Image (cartoon, rainbow, N blue to C red; front, top):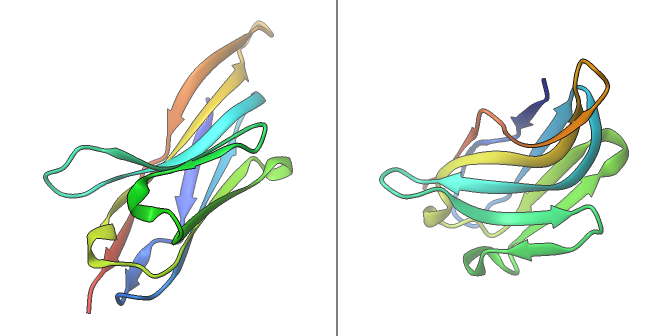
Length: 124
């Protein structure tokens, strides 16, 4: 069983910065992509940023120019550098990993995994 684990959330003032990390561990064969989603109270979960295995990235319009996603492939880890944070960035941030994992019989199965979420609160 693969488990992405997020860290780095917290409380920050408007205009401040935070860096989120997500490490995926387990019987991983290959990772096709990793990304970050967020869900604010009363709203649907939305994509914030994604990065594929060939280093292509995509961002929500609301975070372009402020957030940067990067990845350490050797450590199966993805980062989200968040700068110039705004009140509306407040949400629970979830890591997503699209990967293939080894099964008990040695086959591989492609699956989507989610982290448990980390709270980001932007407040003065």
